[in-house]
Image (tube, rainbow, N blue to C red; front, side, top):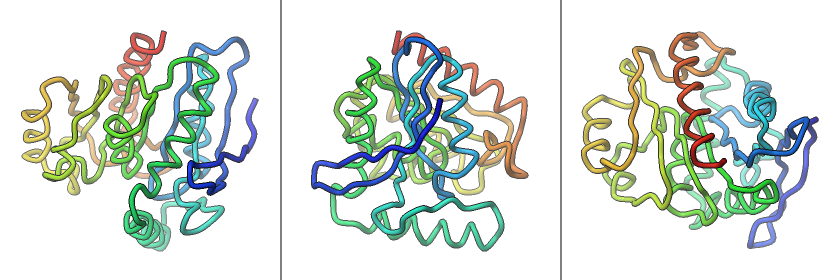
Length: 227
């Protein structure tokens, strides 16, 4: 069962989120953080997949503070639009979109312990959520763009983290991944022989074996920490 809901951040800002509920009692909750393409068909499908595994899944619209109703595809024009929207959100005064993620986590807590998972920009936001958002029990960033720069490496996670990276990711060099791993021995880091975006079966970067391995590891990780 799925629907769009409205959440309210601490500053009173209201924004939509996609909610997918499991068919039976929830095992916990997972907040799904979008890529630069908005809460599009792929992100909704990811949330549905977690709901099918027994979790309440919430995908907040993290672009809503700068533009409502964003659901992009994967053309060069869509990528350019998404990059611009990401820059606009990243340029918001602190705490910016972190307070929207907090609102999503607070709402999701009705189902029990809350995990966060995110992809690309959502991976970066997932890392920040692990460090800054209260009530997060476990976090799984996928190829979080920007996670390996010094300012992000300097953050300290407040919960267990499993980080997925790709060997052939032009936007996240392996030396940056190595620096992140060295700085955070407490984080479980996995590297796949794939490119950035390997989890998204709606685009050419999709790598089925890598996606399956990462999904299995992610579900095991959430089962351990949210159960």
